[in-house]
Image 1: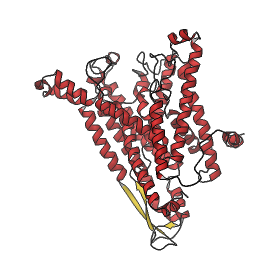
Image 2: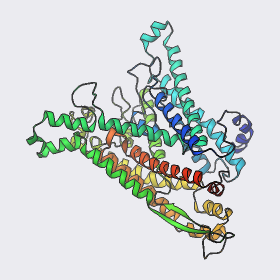
Image 3: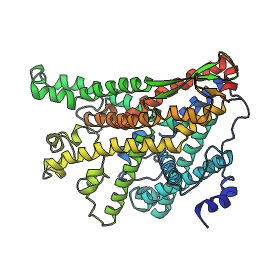
Image 4: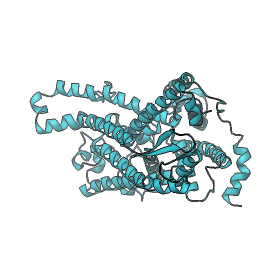
Length: 500
């Protein structure tokens, strides 16, 4: 029995997994906006609910990826959207490789795909939570265990249960937003998480260790209070201001925001006309970032899984892939170091990497040759740009955004390109002139922008991937709001876009 036959037999069981019911008719804009705000507030509440019984010295193996996984270390939403993204990657790979044969234009196959994806997400929640608890990364607090009179294993099970519940809540919160709100729940959580990190990165005055505050603006105030102006205007002083003071990260963040907005607004528009309704015209936009920034989520998620797998092996005494800094999940040598992401100048400028005043892990890199540090940057650049292109192509081909699928959708709606014969083949031939090229170019641009942001640093350490995601999501959320308001003002548009 092959996997496709197995899926069809298991389909009745997948359908029994509870899901949020779709609205039976049009949902008014105010109601959609209300659901979106309510879920957003619930998200902010849950990321501040700590996991009961968790030892504060536990290791967060996904700490570097928290911003765009929309999780919070030590909270019941610690897993964030990680299981949803991982399940999506696995399923896309299976469908794209032809291992699972599903025609996503067929309603039955599309329903089977969605049911199996929901089941796979629950599996991924367990697979991401259990190894962290069982492997001793998320440790039970022995003081709480003794106070309750229970063995640590019971507390470990409670930690796993809380993480699992948090992962399930994220799934259903995403469904509520996707079906009853505006846009996507996953996108909303990413935007909320990264926006919060950026605001904290700008204005946070509190440093638990004392000394220089972490926020950019408080940090600059502190530097001007503690260093003479003559020093700050010198060569080394300017380096301190721009690198340590966060001015470079702030400038990079602003520039990347403008570049992403510009790229999102750059598009090729194919003119369309309805063959039955004279004067009914429209345009099909092919954006420069055609596959959005989703390929970067896939690239970083895959990178995170590889580095995390290496860490799990290291914890079990298998060290040939590289060593990790004690008490952290940061690789400091070997292939895992080369595959880990670059996040700031402190990760690729040899002088900064080896400076204890700037990099707390500097002692581990004291004897590392400079070429190894530069090679780390080259490997990450290759992963981002090549991975961005490959995953962009893969996403377009498997998500129904390819020229053939789009041409069939346009043809079924009764639209055609003025001056050309009404035929899906003609539409496909014209769209094929643009979509493959824009897909490759957009994937490379997103990878390059991510690389630049990571090299120079970002406000709040949200990483280049996180910053690009936030800007792109905010731009598309604005477009969704505009479209919702238009359909509310002009009810006939709802029928045209299939909402009624």
